[in-house]
Amino acid sequence: MKFCTIGTSWITEAFIDAANRSGDAQLAAVYSRKLETAQAFANKHGAVKAYTDITEILEADECDFVYIASPNILHPDHIKIAIQSGKHVFCEKPMVFTDKQWQEIAQLSKAHQVFVFEGFRHLFSPNYQRLKKELTNIGAIRSALLQYGQYSSRYDKYREGAEPNVFSPQFAGGALMDLGVYPLSMAIDLFGQPKDFSYYPVLLKNGIDGSGTMVLTYDGFIVTLLCSKITNAFMQSEIHGEDGTLIMDAIAPISQLQLHDRKTAQINELANEQYEADMVFEIQAFVEMVSENNWQLHDSYLERSRTIAQLTEKMRKENGIHFPNE
Image 1 (cartoon, one colour):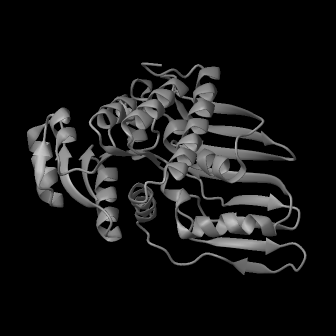
Image 2 (image 1 turned 45 degrees about the vertical axis):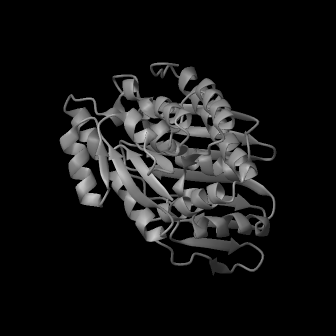
């Protein structure tokens, strides 16, 4: 499949590299508001065309789908424009930040018969799929701790008085929307929608969350999720069952995975080598879904995205974190 891009940051470059490695998707055109930026990006990555008009690139015949990696606040509008142009959509997380936006996109997707996919690269890797299979071997789940803490280089700019997009409520930034959705999406994918939930953020001076702790309540167990853009975290993530414990070195991606068997006291190494550029796996999943016209799979992915949007919206609003256009 041929694709065009909206966004010229490092994440777009990583996606293009992963697409090339996958062999399933090929860059055709790029968009940027500035011609120099668009042309330079196109030349660097071998795109045939560069555009500065978003309508023109979305109407271009050479694009089967559009990859959206614009600032978070623009994702919903860019998705809707792409759908109305008849293009399938692969959007970086977070796809939306309100349930209302999700409903509008879901309705448009059906009306125009195009697929919409939210990029959660960690949920498609082989080691994560192994983790899911091993859940049945640790007995009744009693607790879990999933974390993603990574000090952002842009936090230095914030501390100097600037307000980069990832630390700005005007651009739908913050730890929850940028990193928190990684452990949250994993919890939703593994355990479903929680009975109850809460979020305890560390708010910065401008009202955005620099870090935070989520607590999800399920029947018989609690899941604790940690996220931070203002500190580094080095502890492992764990899922605790009555018969064993699954331990992973990270959640995006998992490169080390162990099962500690309580009954035998054995430690089983479960991880295999996989592409470091783990976006390859989500690209393969997306292309396969579209090629097979698999609406059942599409709807299940989209419903997961809705649950994440509903939870993050409520978590933010309960803590006074508000974004424009919601």
